[in-house]
Image (cartoon, rainbow, N blue to C red; front, side, top):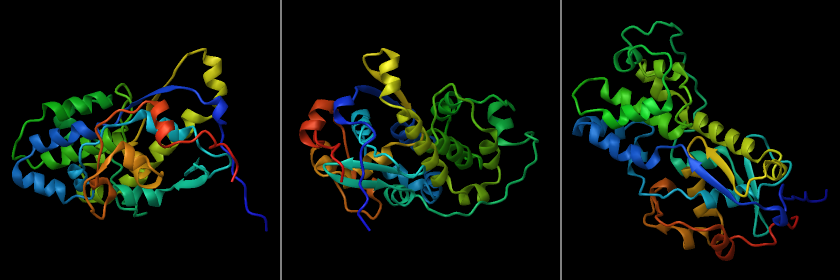
Length: 290
């Protein structure tokens, strides 16, 4: 059987500039959570399935790295994965990669939550006055304004805010799925839920939507630079790229540790223009089939 050939969706000659903004509150949420919890509560938070992310070094989001990756997506790839053709190599970003890089569990278990619509006495009732129109901005504001207290709700509330504004992030005006907020009241089940899968799907669906029918959509827009808003937590893809794209980690980040979870090992504080990235990392022959 002949080896399968892969081609990029967008040839190099049709690449276009883009400005990418990230919705994830990744960097800000760390300091806000640490400042809002007592010592014991903070330790409890760190022991949660997502608590280790508080120890991620400072990583400056790079929209140009993400855009460079998206420009090199190949044709005919699975709907739930990202396949890139970079420097003549086929690189695949899968759910397993997402979990390995982030340290989030890949459990397929879906706990059964109470489907009662009652909000009286819930976290929604206590902290959002029972509103059914809670936006991502409102959650971020709650993180900013939350004051340290010994209340048993603190870890639950901040976990809910953290997951939604960091891992499942969307633009500020988007309304939160109230089901997610209600689940935090059943915290033992909430901890078991596969939030990594939700985060991964949010990010992948967003990337696929952005690049659908490109570059035709960009040309038809008559804009000089495309503008995209990224959902989920693209920082995880960025760290994956440091580890898998030849020369990228060496030139654009600093490896400062050797922990089992890759997210804990990388620090990045610089901005890189597309042209510089192409010179250092990405090559102009990336659309050659392999």
